[in-house]
Image (spheres, rainbow, N blue to C red):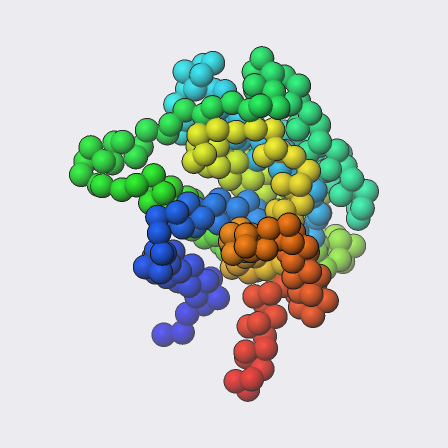
Length: 318
């Protein structure tokens, strides 16, 4: 039986998640893997916004910051469990995305990019300046999620790295499954139609403003959950999680791997998360090499690394 594209993507992702730990030289790499999954979840949301709907955002780290600080503030100030705080952060991010998305998604091109950038900067400034709530530039501690202790009491012996590897992998797999389901649905086809041409999509009855808003809200929820996972895993958070550079990193991960493909974007997240670990021996040349790699990929593989490599592989087979 031939697998569909969705089934093949999920199967490859599941195999990679299960097999990768067998090649880890030390426990530290469980943390690197967990960071890849957290970043992969955020860029999966950008696949829906950029790859499906064709809308750019340079402020999505703002939603990650909202999710992160929801898990930091809510348990301390209101006694809300961290998992419920994560859900609350996602709801707040979704509502906020719906409110700000209605006016800014009327913009196009670099006007839209600058508007979303302004939102991200605003969130970062609030998190930095409201020190009585957020700890200011120094950041604040985040309460332990507590789930690992419960599992260990049940007989599941695991390190913190192993726990977060598995926990974040579940969120990534579910997020990828939802995004792939959306891709094949009537809504996904309508999103891809407006990506090709908003005017053409409107002529066949697609409600372009509503669909763009939906994509923006969904991607904001993905970013928020990603930020929550990052905060809970690190047990500490600073306003940098909502900073401009984090937004840029998200977009670069998605575009580098292939923004039109869920697996490609996750592949890009894996490269940009793991590559700095491999380039540490270059010290001050690390960022220079990263920039050079990204330039070369954009010149010779404009569709992204994974789609370009798969296309060339299929071409050789034929």
